[in-house]
Every structure is written in C-alpha cells, then in structure tokens.
Length: 379
Image 1 (cartoon, rainbow, N blue to C red):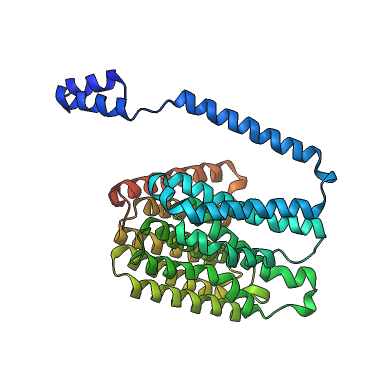
Image 2 (spheres, rainbow, N blue to C red):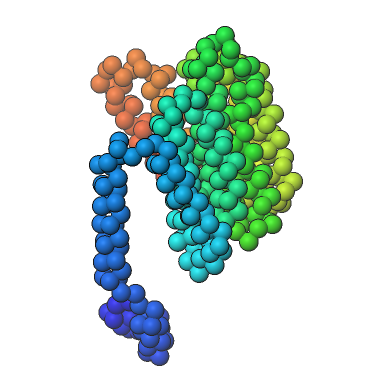
C-alpha cells in the first residue's frame, strides 16, 4: 500500500500512526514479488506455446489413436490431481482450484470434439454434451466455488437441451420430429436448477456457488419469457414450440420450480425469486392468445419487468431493480415508435419523439435513484 495514501488517512483522522505502522508491517510481510511471478508466468506461457506449436506442426503425422490416448492421459492426470490434492488447494488457493477444474472441464469437452475428428462421427452435438454432463458435471458441482464453473455447467446444460430440441429436424427430417410439448419440457429443464441451487445453499459450505447456479437458472427463465413476449408482438403463435401445448408445459414446469424454491428457503430473496420464476411461466401462457398483437406483446414484456422490479424491491436487489426500470423504459420508447411510425416522417414528429425519449429517460433515472434498494447483495 502506498505511503502517500496512508499519510492521507492519518491526516484525515481515519487512522492513527500506530495503525498505519501495523498496516505497513502487514503489507511488507505479505508482499508478493509480482515482477518475479510475472517472469515465471511468461516463461511457462512460452514453453506451453512452444509445445503447442510443435504438436500443431506435426499434427497430421501423429496417429489419431495416439492423439486420443495423450488427450485421455492428460484428463486422467488432471482428474487424479484434483481428487488427491483438490480439497487442500481449494482451501488454501480457491482460484487455483477453480482454474484447474475449469481446465479439466474444457479438456473433457475438447476430447469429444477430438474423438469426432479422428473417427469422423456425425452424431448430434447434444449426445457428447450429455455424456460430459454425466461424467464431468458431478465433479464440477461437488467442488465448484465461483461463477467460472457455474457458467460452464449451466452453459453446457442449456446448449445440450436446445441442441436436442432441434437435432431430429436437422439429422432425421421433420417426419421424425418429437412432440412440441416434449421439446418444450426439455428446453425448460435448466429452470429446475433454481430449486436445486436454493436447496443446496442451506446444505453446502459452498453457498455462494449454489447461489450462482440459482441465479443463472433465474436469468434463463427471465430471458426465455422475455423472448416469448417479444415474439408475441411480432407473429402469431400457432405451431412448433410456440404452440399452446408447448407454452402450457413451460408454465407448469416454471410454477413447479417456483413452488420448490419457495418451499426450500423462506427469505425475501428466494421468495422474490420464486415469484419471478412463476411469473415467467404465466407470461408464456398469456403470450399465446395475445400473440400477433404488437401492442399486447409490448405491454406483456413491460408487465413482466414491472413484476421483476416489484420482486427486486421486496428482496433488496438494487441492480435488478435498476435493470428492470431500464428495460421498461427502453420497451416503452420502442413501443412509442412502433405505434407512431407515421409521425416520424415529419420534423414535428421527430421533435415529439425526441422529447418523449428524454422524458422517459429522465423519469427512469429518477425512479431508479429514488426507489432502488440500498446497495448490498441480498442473501
């Protein structure tokens, strides 16, 4: 820590000289030779790039089975290291453990791509992703501590679900397409990570990690419902995954997930999360009869985000409340342009549009500042 900053704190009366001296002693004792560590890092990076360059230059000369064996050996060595030393490293250096687990997960994903390249397989992508979820996700979930692994696991899950939904049409033709209700159920499965995260938060010492899982499921539910509301203002829902049976399945699963979250943890944050997830399911169901109506679609999206803003006030989510106000304001601006497109062809109409934008932006800023909850992450 800089001497000038400490002296400034002493002059401002924030700390006394004795405290400043203890701070200096602590920082000196725990100082890290950043330049030396940077040199080590650059050297290791150079060696790694050199090895990659040598392998890449002779890639075609290495038999496919040998490449796969080396790849598999790397995965096995890294997995063994994590099982033997991962818990200790996770306690002493959490980020080192996170990076190691992330590398293992990426190596696992790359192995399936490598396998497909060697044997020229053409199977749908969801199949190797499902295998990855079975083999690697349990280790990630049992040891993960931060956003890094939470995003990796949820990202693979979401991609696998949606690739499954479209795989039959791509690989087998429309005549073998599965029922829309079943595909809607599969693509809604990631929402169930919300009650899983809420349940594990009270039973695991890694509460923050499971909170991230719950939050990612929450974002998935809100994002999906928002897209459904936007689509309702563009076209009429009558077939495929926008049909009534598909929307009903999404609603039922969202309500079930919301009920599980509510029953699992009774606090303002999870109560708000349960209410929002239930609202996303209701929006999907209401969107069906309102689809094809531009105004109805816009109002439905704003209603969803009004509900999210109310839930944010209840839970104390400052950032979510501000984002909700911004989304409603933006949608109101877009809706005003859509409903008054003829006025925009004249100078007077452009002036009115500009004044409307400024008025909405000013009102959104005032609302955000005046009513937003206090800063701090809700539990």
